[in-house]
Image (cartoon, rainbow, N blue to C red; front, side):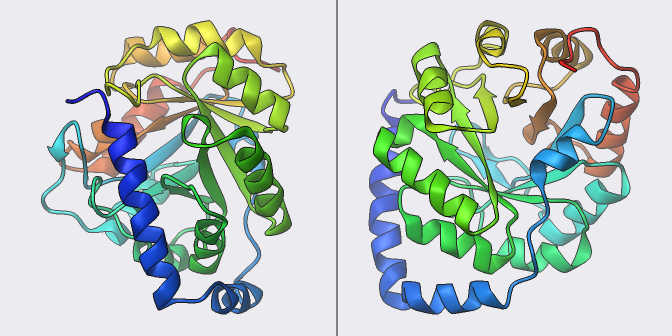
Length: 271
C-alpha cells in the first residue's frame, strides 16, 4: 500500500463531489432534507448500554483488503446486525475505493431503528446535506482530511441538520484539534490513513487525553477477544467493527458473539 493513499482518495473525492453537484443541486438536497424523518441520536445510543457499545459496519471492500464480501447485500446485513444487538450502524458510501454507495443508507433506513453513520471522506458541506437527505443520523469527519476552519464549519452544519459527527483522529495533534473544534464524539482510528497500518496502541495513547464528557469510539483492527479487552481497558465507550464481521458467514452471529464477549462492564470504561 503506497503511503499517499489518503491524498489519492481526497483528490478523487474532490472531483467526485464536483460532478455530483452538477447532477443534483444543493438546493434540491436542502428541500429533500425538509421531508426526511428526524435523525436518531448516535451519542445517546452509544451511552444507553452499560457495556461497551458496538457500531457494526456495512462494508464490501477496502483499498488495503480489496473485496472483503463478494456476496454483499447491505440491507440483509444491516437487518442481521440490528437483530443481534448492534447499537448503531456504519455504512460505507465511498464507491471508488471502498465499493460503497450512498443509496445503501436510503435502502437500509426503513429496516432498522438504530442510528446510521455515513462513513465517508467528507470534504464539502454538500456531502453533509447528501447524508441527511439519504437518512443518515451521523457523519464521519476526518481531522486529517480537513483544515481546522472546515472542521468547525462542518460540525456547525451537522448540528444545524440535527445530525451528530464522529470526529476521527489518529494522533495527539489531531485529538487536540478535535477537542478545540468542539467534538462531542471522537473516533480514534488505529489505522494510519497514510500507510493503512494498524496499531491498537493509538487508542491506548489518545483516549486519556479526552475528558469524560467526550464519547470515545475505538476504530479499526478490532477482531478478537484481546482487542476488545484492550479497547475497553483504554476507556472507550464503543468500538466500530467492520472487516471482521464482513469476513464471517453470518455477520449477525459474529456480532452476537462479540456482544457476549463484552457482556460485563469493564473497569476501563468511563462513567
